[in-house]
Length: 292
Image (cartoon, rainbow, N blue to C red; front, side):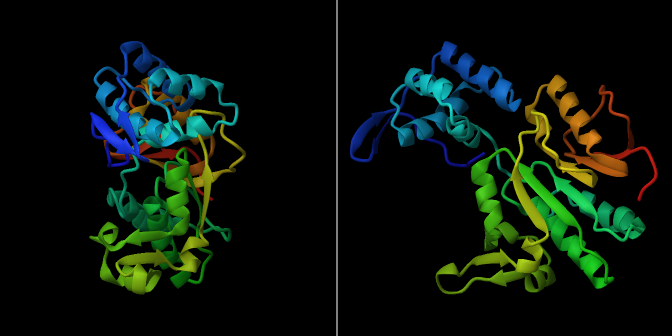
């Protein structure tokens, strides 16, 4: 989630004294029900203080002084913007380049070498956050396929958070976000900022061109995204109930080409679900059928 939490108590905002509102049990229940219904996010007991802290900052920015007024606006907003602001405030955007590296090693060692189709491989990063995951896929995909004179992969990157997608589309990151990346990757695929952009890096245009960003809510009927040869949906289903997880996996499996791979987070499991996928390695599953 956004790392900054609103300090409880009284604060000064735009010249007016703002007293942090109190979230009642009934109001928390209303917010939790709405988050579950629209986003599949489970806000169980013990999350009251977290929800209070994060929504207080949003309410102050929007001019609401109590949760009752904020929730009334949330329910009456016909544009959907208030709901988007809510999920942006509640969701976690923790990610990093080459996170859970075993999955990227698996692509390089077991997926890319067996790709014999003349068309570009299609890969979906289904919870792309601020872009580190899809850009990591783009980096290794470009390194492997371009060097062999083949089409580089097409990558669809989606997230429910508009704030995260806005940041991802810039392809721009502070140097500390790139710690741990091998130096040649930085030199070959990223541009170093100068002047007021000192300490920043930006993906080169040819890398950014491989990735298309779209806002997609995984608990809703998926738009016509087409079929994919690999789908990454990692570290997002931990926020869903088991029933919602099963529905999401069903939708994602339907978007996989025969022989395609589904990658989930190492803290996630498809145990107890009917999905029709083969378990290959920890957090890696394959749809039955011949590869292209």
